[in-house]
Length: 140
Image 1 (cartoon, rainbow, N blue to C red):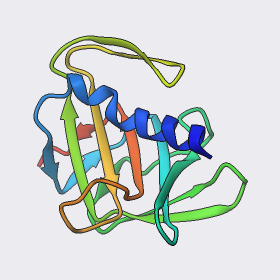
Image 2 (spheres, rainbow, N blue to C red):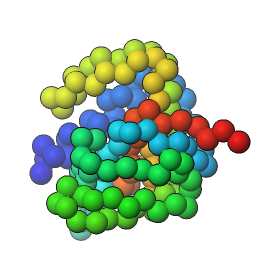
Image 3 (cartoon, rainbow, N blue to C red):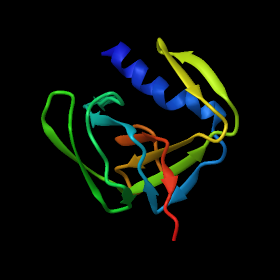
Image 4 (cartoon, one colour):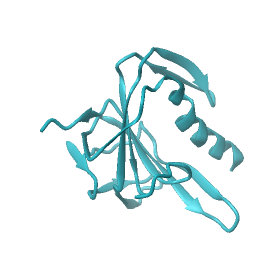
């Protein structure tokens, strides 16, 4: 369990070194690579882990906006839903090639990443999220 938690935490904290300012947006276009990280409240702690990995099969709608519900199949083959309450958009401001949690993370300046959160408040710690690589802003 501790290893599982450590990997999940590293996935979110490691790339942040190369992020430019985070932008809160109301909608994004989805990339092909995405993962779901569910957090569950226990009596004295919160446990977060991968519910759908980047390599697992699944597609997102082309455009995703706050209030949408995303349906996916979790790692156990069960159907799940995720209600999008907040969306953050990042653009990497420099190249990054690092190994975290035994996995190599490579990003290039200009790459984008979005996080869909299931909470309305300003907290992004210990909340479930969908991470999308290569997302974009919806042009109006």
